[in-house]
Image (cartoon, rainbow, N blue to C red; front, side, top):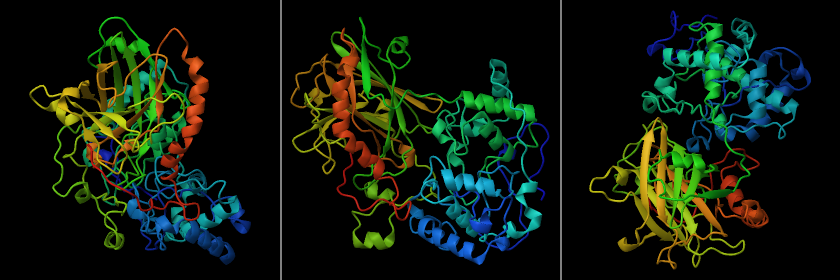
Length: 585
């Protein structure tokens, strides 16, 4: 079947970046999920090659239907339209199978996926989306049966004119990586104007990024190419080459099969793969502050930061209390620390597509920015988990912010305050850098110090006389870089952390992306990590203590992660009713 997109000579222009999928002639309806792209079938369904729905036994189709109703309908809906009861809580939305638009394929632009394509997605899921992998939960036979059932939602799967095996994109002759091929790939990236969506540094912050929408009219973001876990179709050079060749149906990401040579697609695949920043091992939990002589850096560009060992801190959405944030924009902060005889300084860096440096709190509070399911809101408006409006543009009225959290009193053992803003009797100290204050005139400090004793009450801003944290921030090419500085010791030991060598000091991080309506408890959070001021004694001496603390506090990270996972029985279900609420950004 011919793709109705206009063919362009040479590299595509800006207008060619918008993918127009082919118009199908058949009128059948079928449901195809956001990630359900694989092959399935048991019994007869296990035969090799593409299996049309009409070739599957009634028994297998009924078995596939039962799997679908139990495992898939909660998100994709009873009729496969992507409108299940959990769908309004999800970003991106579950796939509408009746539209016949499949993103991750090995076939040409606008074409249907093969059974192998479908099996891969059903088995492995789609990373960075609500779509889980069902390998290990469903048998291979059950996966084949549910795929056979999914294909009945769209009539073209039964039409020999649309046989996907006749539309395969051939992948062969992968060249080895080299500086030359990466350099040429960078040239192709510029010529093809990939930066208009993905940004010059690949962080998804291009000039077109704020207005990108899919074919359903839902807002979407350009992939952050520096993070390996953001590549939904795989992050190997071969995977990237495949996406460049097939495009992603239903999105602005086009196929370059006809507009780039095979050599160019391999070159750009190698270049894009080179943008991935390899993070440190996730097992690292200690931030090692390097001791230096002389003055500490005041800004993020100071070359002295190269002496500090970085720690990659992973963040997830806050889902302990209402209003939660299931899909935060910020999922990682890289932290460095330096100290001298009198002060300590931290450098925090994180990717953020949109620079938000103004702040106007809505008259109705945070809740006025959010939507809730009417039936739930009528029962208990303060406890309802907010739904996600993907038709709304990214906001520009709330600020970006980052926060460092310490216990006011550092325990010698594993006892620590709750990772989410402490507990009554176990207060935490908060250093919050605000992007709007960075832009404010008059030399006002962009850092606000607060204390908190749990998430059920708003943090307390400490008196101005004790506002002693200096800060400086800079946004460039989709990345914030913020420096925080304070004296090692203060006269406020009862309300503020004191930094001492030889101690493991718990440290945690919070972040807000204003464009995503992140404000107050709608934030990204980390569990507790640990800060160690470098001494002549190697940090490894403390590892046994760290291990004990990590094991004792492991439940907190489990709570954060588990709260985002689906119920075992129904797959992805929205988080249950939450407790408390407070705004502090």
